[in-house]
Image 1 (cartoon, rainbow, N blue to C red):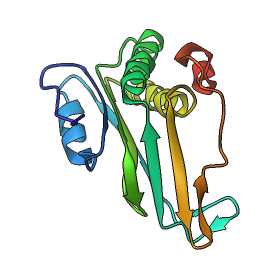
Image 2: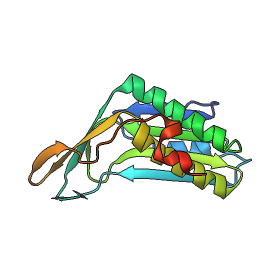
Image 3: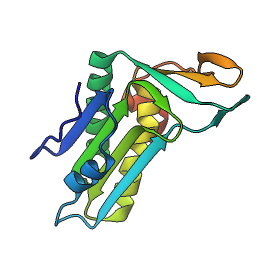
Image 4: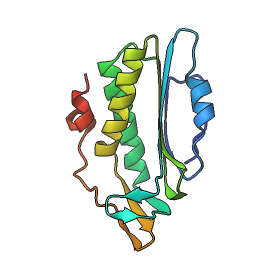
Length: 163
């Protein structure tokens, strides 16, 4: 799936093998009625617990279900923070190198408190409710991430209490 800007829509969710369009997401979210645009970008780092020298991550995604769950995350955020005007949640799939963005959340709202709270809720809930798995490659080998957990609906996830 490509991560094409949704033009006039207020929600933008996608899973893509392409580089995430962070600047385009920020431009899309910026609106005259919003005094706050919060951007979170999760990037591939060079280490993980017990694994120094990480050189890449590979994200495996059940795309159809992942997009459905990303939509559910956005709906849950909107129900908690109805003042939020735009929300974008895009996640990468495939192999990424150190420094590349793997997930980006952008939230626009009239005020910063709602924008920060909704953005944090979105990233925390994506991590617990969307079927995306990562394989780490490091100096000593490669394996699936040690951070495994049950996939839960957005209303039961860790971020659900972020209000």
